[in-house]
Image 1 (cartoon, rainbow over the protein chains, first blue to last red):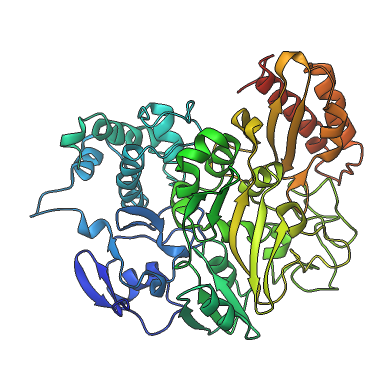
Image 2: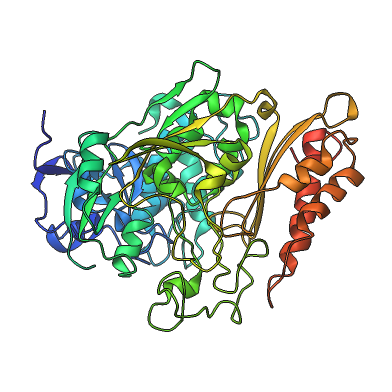
Length: 175
Length: 330
């Protein structure tokens, strides 16, 4: 069955751009005016443009929008439900997970994707036992797994505290 | 980016048919190619998206593993067989890039990523034989602490940036290819070239040829293997030096060993000389050091990267000692 000529953005079916050169980041920001997703380096080095595609975190600056035909993209604008912040957004507020806020949408989308990777048993460079399917969400694991998101303000301690607060919740309460 | 057409390949035949047209590039996860397009270092007339091709990771009848080239790096690293039978491959993959990039990047694309030499990227300000053949190389007399110490030439001192490929080199991985002339296989260690006089050619792939799969032969000793990466920061940086190793040293003597180095050469560097020097020797720090020195005898430093030779020597010794259970890290 051919894929639909569209992409789903925050649950809304949206026509794809005509020009295949349009990155997913530019598509979100410049075409759809969803400016929550930020452009940092535009070359895959900072993580500010992180979004979720079918629940997996990717860098929208290195993605051509046409490649994501038929897929479902969630940006920071798609996380709140019925006017209530996503628990991780709330945790960033409570734990001072930002200063200037520019990296924050990418940090939050990345951390949500990271939690799914932890649940699926995806190992990281600091995972000691590769044979185990259960990975402890330790401080070292969280920091290693979030290393693709830079914060020029250096709000890392607050970011790690916010993510830890969510990661430590029992699975049924996790978002 | 310069204009290009985009098409999604339905299957390998479809991809190769479209890929035969001059100026066509295959597109995987885009984590390297989209950057090169944006920098106009790549100016293809057409992109053929091959991410819809096989992502399967399957046991082979001989006890190895066949990995579809469109499998994502994360999927390969997390695969239970890889984690338990080829742990050096999982460790190599998860040492590279970031989680976001590993979720996007395909296995085939990882193999074909281009150097991160800053002079290669500096289209406006620097000469580069890899980017513009015959232009000259500004890295050789420039800031070259990240550059090659093994197998470089007067034309190019760039390094291959992949971590995954270093593990694949140690594992004797086989690359399955399909072109308009048919299918063939190449050892991964033969796929990438040394620069010699033609650094613009990264690999021995023919025009339009497509990587369809990577095959890992059975290697029971790889159950005791690892990958160690030394870099300027703890995570999310390219290697200064990396070491992939598997060791079979039951009873104190080295029965067999696999060793490959990253960050030191234009290709993933299989350390055949060190392996030969070590087989049959005691699994001791002295023997590990002698093996490392046998490999690094050919190393040639540039102005800023002599430290890599000593760093490689020490990292090889530490990794092998760890695998032998005589110290170092696992």
